[in-house]
Amino acid sequence: MATHYDEKGKWFTEKVTKDEVAVILQTITGRIEGNLFVMAGTRLTDEINNTEQFIAVTNAKIFNLKGECDYFTHFVNVNREHIIWLIPQSEIKEVSDCKPGED
Image (cartoon, rainbow, N blue to C red; front, side, top):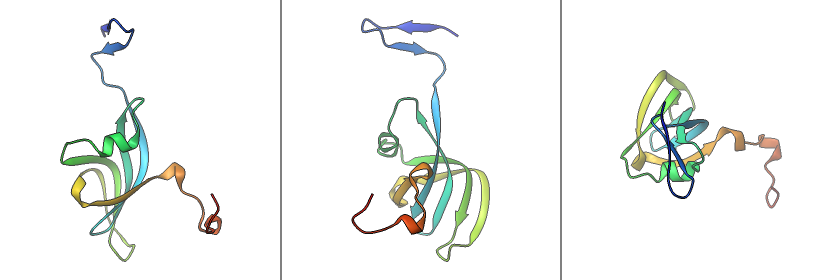
């Protein structure tokens, strides 16, 4: 694999390096728990604000509005316009930790 450097020392390779991030997505029709891939060193917010219409989610559990898991799939494309909110699973705290005015 070839590596190229620009005048500022930034390196480029033929392979795109991405980080896997476990997330929960709330859509207008339910909830999806799965993994997103973001460019290495890029914020999750930057990936979500990308201009592509669909976002790929892998190892996805798809829940209906009642909270029941209807499907599991290794890949699903989600229309960004249908995402209401997104949480990295690493940021989730227990319900008992949810107290107004505290972090």
